[in-house]
Length: 116
Length: 113
View (cartoon, rainbow over the protein chains, first blue to last red):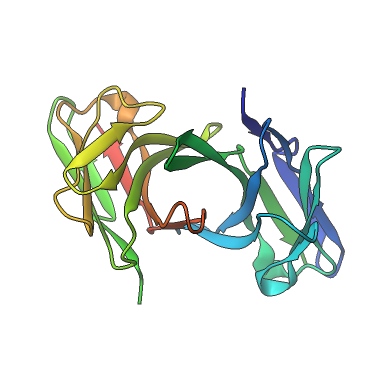
């Protein structure tokens, strides 16, 4: 069955440190993958997306993600985090329901806490 | 300007009462979705729609109805609210097929007492 797994429920890093948030997916077809961020009391905002091509995709606010078909992974990275990056991060997979409709399957999310 | 808006932003309802959550989008998207978010469950799809006057069941439709009277508006209806429906509800829109990302509203925090 199609699924998205974010193995780390919570990650704590120091400001200025590098970051990797892990995402594994299970899907037999070509995946369309996304990372969303949710700040407290807000909706989800798109950070970046992968459809095809270069496996490293750039997103907003210096985030990037690397797609690996062999590992079924789409890990999110940032070279130097800021306290304002503290939020919940969701990995998502676009799934075809019928020929012309689809939906997103979300992981459970990873809460990132950046310590000063 | 916010392209997906939801009303109300928060609501307290009584068990057995009727609750209507509203969503409005100005993205000119055909697809609209309703999700609920619970701690430990992430986001789960309740209902979706890809054309006005038509709705489809998502993964957890029981206890919910949806209505899509126009391309811009999509409502979620709880005919008999229950304690288990306490959650945060998100609406989203998408131009699925040409691009696959979804654009989310700010959410409605529903508390059923």
